[in-house]
Amino acid sequence: MLADKVVHWIEFGRISYLETMKVMAHLYIVAPGILFILSFIILLPFGGIQSYPGRDFGGTVVQELGTGNLDLPSVLVLGVYFFVAALTEEYLFRFLPVGLAAIILWRRFPKAVLLISIAASFIFGYIHAPNYLIVMGSTGFILCVLFLKIWRSQKSFALALASSTALHFSWNMMIIVVNVIFVALGLL
Image (cartoon, rainbow, N blue to C red; front, side, top):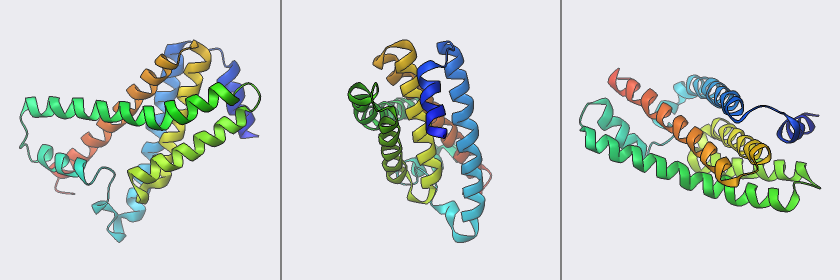
C-alpha cells in the first residue's frame, strides 16, 4: 500500500539532508508543475486563465511586474512579503497540524499523521485556489511529507519548518515568474 511505503521512507529512508531536499525539490517542482500546466490547459477554454493561483493580491503584483512598473526596492519588499507568507502558511498548515499530530501519533499511528497531512493539504489547496485544488493540494501534501521526513531524519522541527518554508517560497517565486512571463507575452 502506498501509505505504508511513504511511512517507511519517512521513517527509515537513510539519505542525507541535502539528498532529501534534492529529491523533494524535484518532486515538488515537477509533479505540481505538470499538474499546473495540465489544469491550465484544461481550464483555458472555460476562462481558467483568469483565475490563476494568487489572482487577488498576487495578480496585481504580477501585472505590475509584467509591465515593468515596479522598481527594485518594491520587488525586494515583495520578496520579503512572499517569504513571510510562505513561513506563515508552513506554520499554520504543516507545523501546527502535522507537527503536533506527529508528536502525539507518529509512533503508534503514522498513517493517521498522513491522513491529517492530507486534510491539512486539502484545506491549504482550497484556500489558495479552488480551481487548482488538485495542484495546490498536492503541493501541500509534498510539503507535509518533506516536513515529516526532515523531522524524522534530523530530529528537528525547526529544520523541518525551515526546509518546507524554503521549498514553499521557491514554488511561490516560480509561479510569480511564470505569471510575469505570461503578462509580458500578453497572455494574461
